[in-house]
Image 1: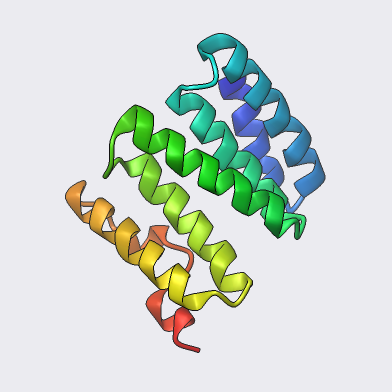
Image 2: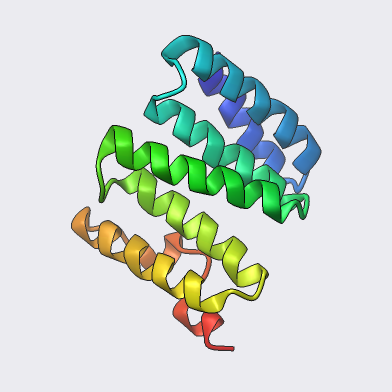
Length: 136
């Protein structure tokens, strides 16, 4: 059920229906916490996704808090240098860029690219914030 809801959340985000995505991701978070407890990587994914909805709504402080929680939980449960961490770092960097904290965003993008390179992913398409954007 959580996977289906998560997919609906993705559709809502793509349609810029952020309040709908928020409601969906809140349900996903509750399901994952009940299913796995609060210290599981699936909970970290739910934090990341809920943060994306908050970001879309312009609720940057709440989004940032969830990105920080997601990163801490990902490191604890998955170790450092996991692809999920790279995705969260990229999303968090987008928020930092939007809030004019480009120096911090550069560091996160750099780390996300390092992780992606370990998994031989194409980071040019994944990272929504490029180094060029951060130099403006």
